Image 1: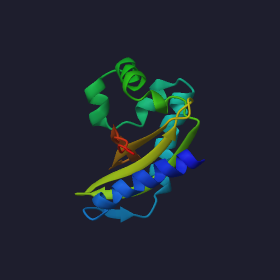
Image 2: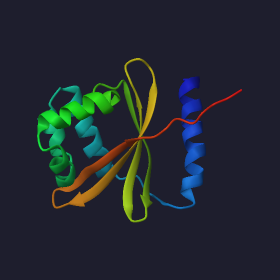
Image 3: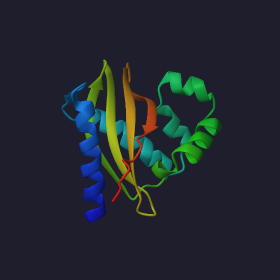
Image 4: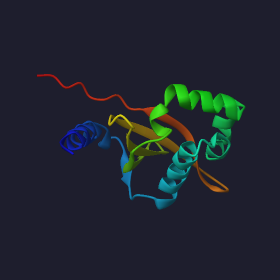
Length: 139
């Protein structure tokens, strides 16, 4: 628990710099539901379903479910079967909507991710995910 609080404190500290340039938004259950649904599909090894939560742009970049699955397995293995998912702040940065998510993987390591979300006729879709760099801690 102490490690989790330290990580959250460091993330919040780093986000203070960004906060001055952004508009924080009230949490949006619909955005959280889309991200959680994609993670649930990953847990079920249902990459075809997970792919449906991606925007048309992302679907176009990867083209097939198999290429999308390979990208997730190689670049974002922490979202495949996380032990814990916590939704942090929702922000608007230069008109783009970003949802910060903290994930604890099966080995106990924490990862902060930023999900770019876009509205569509069917609700929110994921238009990109980036792994946020952990702050360097020194003695």
